[in-house]
Image (cartoon, one colour):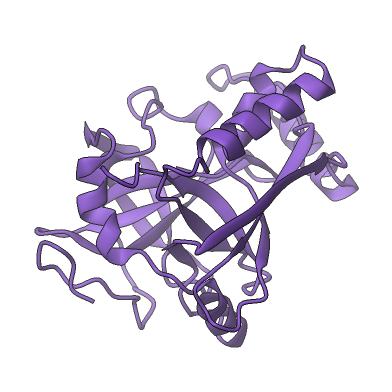
Length: 281
């Protein structure tokens, strides 16, 4: 696929073997999850930038935002950054392990024209095909930006809390920090589970699409709940629905969903975030 500016956008066919310094437009930050080694980890994803445009997708993992070097702690969605990376030891070809001490922020792309110039040419329309390819081959495309033909609904359910395994990871890491008295001071607060999980139900352009219902793992979905921790459940649910359905999925927005799969269950895709310029922008 050729992008607007002439660079070729392709899914890689082989796993890289050596390090590289990548130039990336950050498009999503997923919500943090418990990790035994890192306390909590965040998956960041974006598009690789060549000399003339977008050349592919990239996943940067693991990242612990609470313990980032101060010079790199403030990078945001739609920042253009450069960072040194090593190929990740997993099947997904877009996955890299970043050295966050090397990350440098070039600039922020404001909404929406400059973002559209890079991203509109790579928008896909078939979630069904992406999911089927990933189910058949763990090395198939694992990140995408997909435009629904119809957004059918949005629902919330109570988060069950961390599992026993996740709680054990959190406890082990917090205990490790408590014992590491000679290290720089770290935030030792245990990672809290959000109060609610959210799901979008939608239909893609595949003629045989039976609809998709995918969980939302956007950092902003969890951050909103954290900011409203002192509000009632009804108030929190109303605020989430207003932001993630009424505003983001408003009829005047040309919505597409950033989607990504799980390494252990490649056929399972979640919503990493939303792209929502105005239809007439």
